[in-house]
Length: 218
Image (cartoon, rainbow, N blue to C red):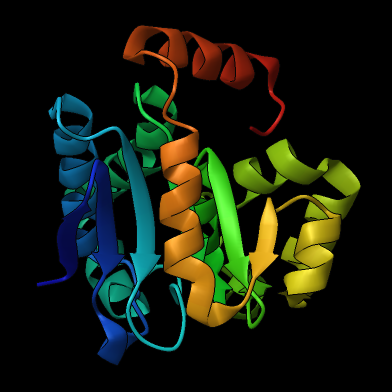
């Protein structure tokens, strides 16, 4: 299964589970993330969500193995773009806090998935990267998220150079809320998710809507 689902108390844990592909985001995984987030939002027994990943890194970004198929099929390309947009929008529409627990390589669209969440915890081995320039791919899923978090100059630097951003810099730039030891990542993320689950669903949706409307990162 590309996405594992587990409930820890009142926290729903979603784990990206394509370690053999470095958790690259293909149609099946993106669809499963969207469906699972919506299901968690509708479940009265779930108070918060954590998105984590199996294997040595969080996500290698979009699955380039699907790119040739999408390029050759305009309808499939449009459908995938809509699905990706739905994935990145889903955390901000939920009446529950969503925490990303990221480690290792967190790349391209995978980085955007993490940054779309309300809170981000990074392990000490975290390595953000945006390598779209090396493949001459327009950073459609990347640039809006970086602009929201960093502003134009810093966003341009990262997409144009593709240089990595390690945990200490990610914390200094507020791309993550906290950096924690790798072995404590899931426990800390679940605890933070629970702490952030005090508002009722409608109040939290209003707070997220206000943040989204401001154009400032949560």
